[in-house]
Image 1 (cartoon, one colour):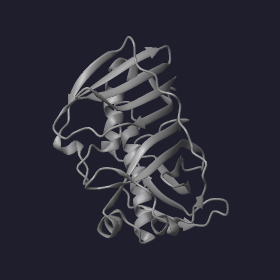
Image 2: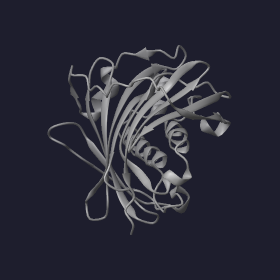
Image 3: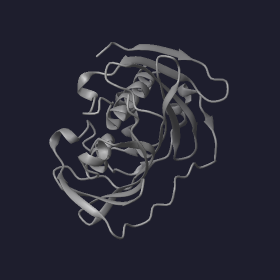
Image 4: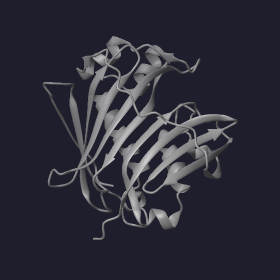
Length: 258
């Protein structure tokens, strides 16, 4: 894994942008030779975490000072193509705006020539670690990112209940959990993709993903990943203990042969 090169510069219209360059390591590539999209999320959050550390508002700092943690409530992901093993990419992130409860952040993945490969919008909220309740945005936490206050809410699509789905069950394992004791948000994509089956996943890759987190999955339990597919669109639900934990809508595209 290549050591990252970080760059920080100003964006006049939004907030600070931050970049890291890296090469895709072998263990992040799937059998098609593409980076696994859950790993794209992990790498992207590493980049935003590095920015937060450099700006003095790391996850550790806001936990110690406010007893708050960042959680993600929604993703909107668009894929032109997936980077391949050993390819060098640049991940750029920018804190776009915030309002009383929500913070919006952009992630863009570029290839070596500067072509955009993946565009991702993430919605963050602050949560009290003890009560597990959403907390209002503290202005001093977001101030270092130089993002704008904007009352406008960015809303995702409407997620409908599944009618004729197929499903698989998965156990929540210890290493599915992060430092805050809840399931790492990239793990939900693992469960969502896995239910599509190997035959499908060797022929198609996502083109657009909308993913909404509804309720935390309890450690040590069992989740059900359900899918309902119509052509190249699939609708997904992650459920456990009789409750909906996450929902997704994915549009797929045929994998281009190299």
